[in-house]
Image (cartoon, rainbow, N blue to C red; front, side, top):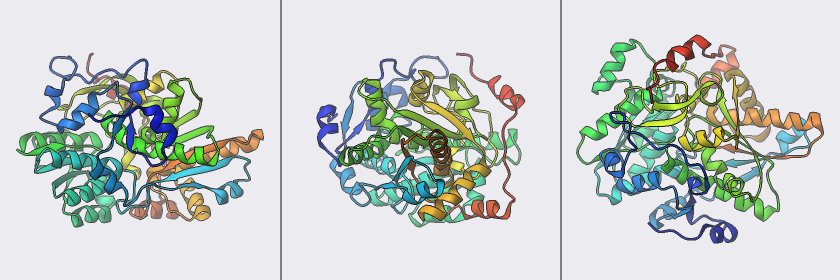
Length: 454
């Protein structure tokens, strides 16, 4: 694996040539993935039928701080990177806050989100391994769109299992995937064994990311020349997304500015993990301190109401077990419009950092999120994705806190997607028909009772 010393890289370059691996600087590492049948840690050999070889190496690497980005990936990145770091002057003025608000905008590419950063990397490694195609899941559709685009570029087949409620809510996102050549199936479907089982156990279900993951993994394992790729949760994805934070950090250094508060939405972890990576690295090494806030939907509150335990990453229980903050693999979230945040668990890396109290977490209601999205659109001129709007909600709340306390803090948040395919959600908010949902304690207790006994 090609590596270079990370201190030199972080100090001297603005356009990243390497990804940053947070695990290398963690004194207490995240717990390993486990084989469900044996309870033993997964080896590269165990993961080989599911993932690409190089991605397995990246997944299991806990010692290499920086991993060099291959030239074909960097060449692709030039289409949309570096992404802009923007100061939200108009939002600051509207709030009357002394806080300085910056956002790293990842929506300036055809896929409309940050997901392309990892999609192109995973497609590249699949092609380099000589594979015919890949399978994946997608929630709101940003990841599926990004992977479809990357697979078209590298001439790979792409099969996407899209959470059923999002498949129905976001038909145009589905059609973008098909335009790029992907096959898109609403999940749970009747095309896989696990899909048929889930449909039988939960008739009329709207699906979940856990369901879609199960179907995608089954399809990959049963189809010669295919592997499974994913858009969040695992270390390999956070690694690729670190390019967001590396660019943001370089831009702040050029400006002579240091953020005090860093805020990102959190579903599985790709958005938040990518944004905070180099800043958390400084915090882990004792070089600087930052207040880091994860923002999740109240309808799927892994951090704020979940438990830190080993759980299945998928509803069908065919994937390895991961130790993470989870509300249970059996939990089927409400069909909220922030489809990309409807995963039942959280990245093992971020879960360990949260458990060590190196970051905070808050949950927010859907109507409050869209109120923030509307305010941002009216002041800053960008229509944000529902997922990123969770970070906007928390940013506005923090800016108002600064106003009340008379504190001039610098806030950074990740705006990692646009909302132009989410107009049904905006329509519901504008019409006053949008509802809020929070699981009851009884709902969560039933789900926790089914956690594996590890």
